Length: 434
Image (cartoon, rainbow, N blue to C red; front, side, top):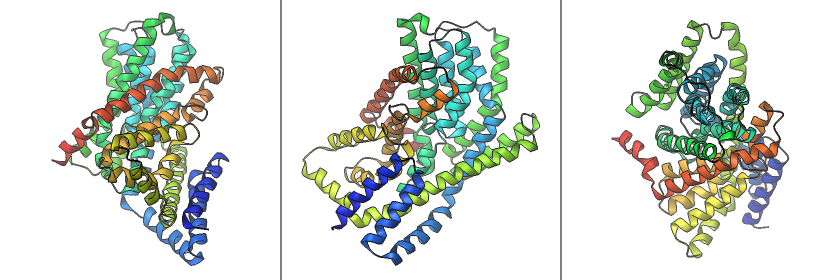
């Protein structure tokens, strides 16, 4: 049996493992280790496992993961998500569909400290869904805005998706974070446009909420300032070159912890569950990285990336036609597999093709993360949809999927704009480099 055939079987086994809900990291680890053993021998497999495990986990850049996860967990436990939503609610809640728009804005703001789509959807959903239900919002618009808004968690920096992409491709985490800012804001505006169009066509979908006076607006904005200041310091520090991403994560975590303790939003006793959740999430992400670093050498031995690259070159398709095929493949895979799993499985194959075609790797990182976002709300898997379903138990799954469809279209529009105008992602990193 040739090495390429072994590689194909390995990928099939990997997808079977993922379909059986075996953890992503463990699936990658098992297939990579087993594949190297079959192609080479047990000594090579054991040597790869030990060396890649140590080198990946001991990498300095990996420390950004637990620090940003900790920052998001403290912010969520301290109730800062409620403050962000209240501020947005006070400013735009009186508009038609205003509560849904406030949900999107709240998700975008909380995404800037959480780095997780699931955490963003759960945290903001618990706050926003009861409010939208109280004011008579349609279930589809209410749940759809939470599920779609939650996806901003892996696009607006800090982002676990960008961190994994950077580690797997050896690109700059800081540049990827900064590259996600304009696309993240663009997608936020497109989501709000979807809500405006929906409520203009069907006003009953999102009735206007009560008006607030300037004093209430100012008070809500003041309450949200602690978390906004953390966002400005951490992300602004990276952009200005004051902090590395790891240092920014440390500073941000420290600031959130001090503010939460001083304001008595949390107590020292609350740190036990917070740290436990942080360790659990970090371990999961570390296992994915370890698995990806073992799976990568296995793919290299199978020569599948080179074979695919040669095959695509032989088709005579241009760079953008090839990119289109890759994106369609990502969207199809996103219908069945978790986004991070899809990223770590496909990057060893796709990334060499992308760089050969001459596309900027930072730009493609943003593109890849947006496609992953689309998978988070695409049936039948749609992880964020299941998360929202857990919060809104009485809303049928079909209603939530119908609700997120217009937002999926907005993501596709954002994707097309980024392909047509790469500077939307590359402008800020270029300024940062200067």
